[in-house]
Image (spheres, rainbow, N blue to C red):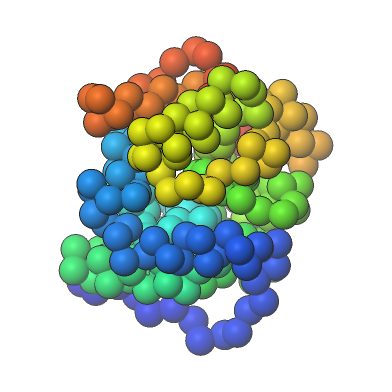
Length: 243
C-alpha cells in the first residue's frame, strides 16, 4: 500500500498564521528524528494514542487528524482505525508526512488544508476528530472549534490537547523546555495563546459539544514518555462528544 495522493483542489488556508506555518515548516526535515526538535512529540505519542483508544472505538472508524504535522500521531492512528486523513496548513510538513507514510505502507490521505476548509467540503463525515497541540497556534480558537464540531458525525468524538495559561505552564513549556533544556526550538510557544481548561470547556459547550473528560498530561523527558495525571495545570487532554 502507498499513501493516497491529495486532492488537487486549491483551497484557501482559513484561520492560519503564516508565521506559525513557516515555523513548523522549517522543522519538516527533522520531524521523524526521535532525537531532533520534534523529540517531545515522539515521546508523548503513546500517551496521546492511549487516551484516544481507551475512549472511542477506532476499528472501522473514519478519523481525521487536524494539524497533523509530519504524521507522528496520524501514523499511529492508521494502525488502529479504518480510514485516516491528516490535514495541516504547512505544505512542507505534509510532504514529509506523505513520504514517511509511503515508506511505512500506510494508506493515509494527507492534504494541505485547514479544519475550516475541510468542514465546508466534508461536513458531518468523521467518527473521530483529533486536534493535538494546535489551539495555541491559530488566530481564532473559536473558529477552529466550530470547524472541528462540523466535521463530526452525530455521536462522534473529539480529542484535543493544548497548554494551560498558567504560571507553571509558562515555566515548564517556555522557560524550561525552550530556553533551559532546549527540548524545543525557542519561540515554539506564545504564552498569550495558551487556553485555560475552563475557557476551553465553555467554548466547546457553546459550540454544541459535551465535554466528557479533561486530564492533565505530564511529560517526563528523563523517561522519554508522558503520563496522564489529574492536574491539568500544564499540558492537558480533552475528550468531547457531539451528542
